[in-house]
Amino acid sequence: MSASILIEPIYNNYCARIIDIILPIQQIEFGVPITLEGQPDLLDIETNYHKDGGGFWGALSNEELVGTIALINVGHNTGVIRKMFVKKAFRGKELNIAQNLLESLIDYCKQKGITDIYLGTVDILKAACRFYERNGFLKIDMEDLPSYFPRMKADNTFYHLDLKHKTI
Image (cartoon, rainbow, N blue to C red; front, top):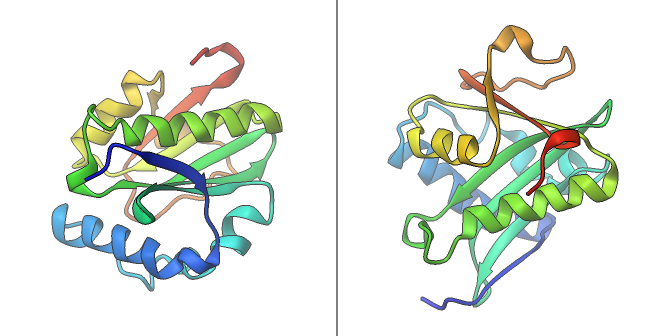
């Protein structure tokens, strides 16, 4: 495993590789009851993420896709994080892939004038919850989400990051 990780925007030519990372982590590693049919966005990254001012980034190690993060621009200076996944063998502080993916997304938000970032996750993903909290995200109740937040059926834990008052 190389310590050289490149974070870059990825597009539809990566759809199969994105699916190959995300589905096994969701279904096998964490037992989240979600299928590809429940995530049609994975079949068209460009329309679902890039088209409206969001983005989709990949972490590449020697051209192998080892991590992902996505942003939906929902308007109102607001973005929603989706598809934050890192292959198990590439997790941890040694390579810092999750942190670098998140920082790339936050930098993009700042460049685009996005001042509020929300996300939904599943409470069984304890490490993910701790990661977001370490990065300044505040846990919020579902009722406190903006009306335009595109909620995923499986999500039961929600976070908000106010970039107007956050330095990273």
